[in-house]
Image 1: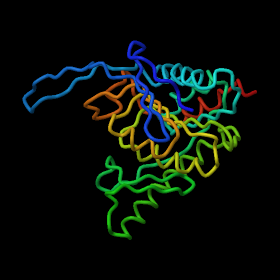
Image 2: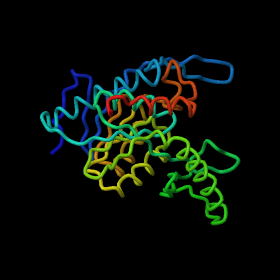
Image 3: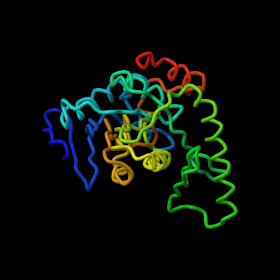
Length: 261
C-alpha cells in the first residue's frame, strides 16, 4: 500500500509511478540570472547550509513518510551512505532512526580524459551498470571498469573497518547521498543491495534533477527527494558549505554511532 497523497499546502507533492513512489518538495524558484560578458550565468541561493543540515531535513521527511505508511510498526532499518559525501548526510538520519549506518562504495566509470562524464558505475564488490553511452571498444570498457573498481575497493578497505556488521535481509534499506547528478553510482548501489534481499529499498537524497527521478524508480521501491531545482547543473551549487569530505571525516562519523552500543 502506498502513502496517501498530501496537499500542496503542506509544501509536499507525492507522486506514485509504477511500483515506486516519489516524495518531492517543489523547488521555489530561488535563483536569479545575471547577464555577464560571456553569456547568462545562473546564481543560486543555497538550499542547505551544509550536509548535516541537509541530513536533518531529510530525516524529518523520512520519518514523516514512515509514520504515514505504518505509524506503529517496529521494523528493522539499515542506513547506507554513498561515501564520502553521503556520510555526513546519512549520519543524522541514522541517529534519528537509531539504526546502523554503513556504506556502499560505488564509483563512476569514466573516460580517462573526461572524469566528470559518467558512462557507468561499479561497486567495490563488482556490480556494474553501464549507461547507453558505453564505449563500443571492449578493451577500453575493461580498462575503465578496472580503474573505477580499484578506486572503489580502496575506499571500501579504508572505511569498512569502522562499519557495523549489518545484514539488510528483510530490512528497510535507505541509501543516502548528498545529491544526485547523473544517478549512475546511486543506481548501481541499489542494484548491489537488492542481491541481499532487503524488504524494501528507499533512495533518499536532499536534491536531484527532476528528470532523473523516473530513472531512479527503476532501482528501488521509493525515492525521497527534498528539492528538484531547475536548472540543476551541479549538487554543490545548492549548499552554502560543500567542502570535500576526507576519509578521516567519514570514518569519524561511522565511529560515532553510540546508539548501537
